[in-house]
Length: 262
Image (cartoon, rainbow, N blue to C red; front, side):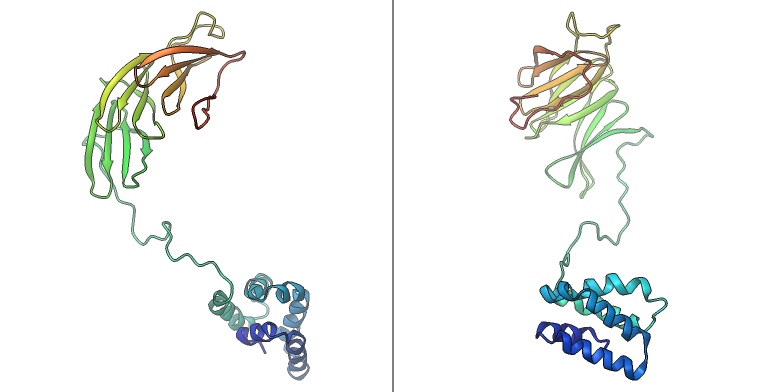
């Protein structure tokens, strides 16, 4: 009577009450406390399992696992729930990227002990772009462990870097208060744009440090620390087009997917 397949079959063919009667009869004969607990449990989940018999395994495990240490004869039933339950109701991952049996690989990005300041994933899952503290930007194939492309930003310290959604442009912000715009595919510098505040942009003292930037497919939007202004830059030509003036100090900016709004 404490058999998962038997319980499931009885429920499936509409014999739930007959199954309960058999369990009660077995308890009256043996006085096994597990049988009494099982009958009480089945009555409490009656409407759930009659509506969805496939949920029997999950419902039983949820209620029996907490008491298995004091009711040890449930162990076999729980094992059957675990092995037979998925046959009737389950979502089973056939492959998971988290299911790995190996250690992470170590990929040396430099022969010296330089810190990695930024890593960008790309649409090609085996390709990453990494930036080192000395201003070197490298594109790596992590599967073949090959260096595909490399950029040197004239020893500028990199604050951050981003790719446009189409991965056409790679934009880098530096401590020189500039944005460097690269052709990502060819790793060539297209333009260098200095970010300046407008005449009414600063809150208090004028700052020359880039606080952040964001990208649309065709424009970069950058702002300085303690500034009320956002500079809009054309990525194709590398020209500052205009400033957005905000009422308050700018802390973050986000573009709409079509680049029409910020």
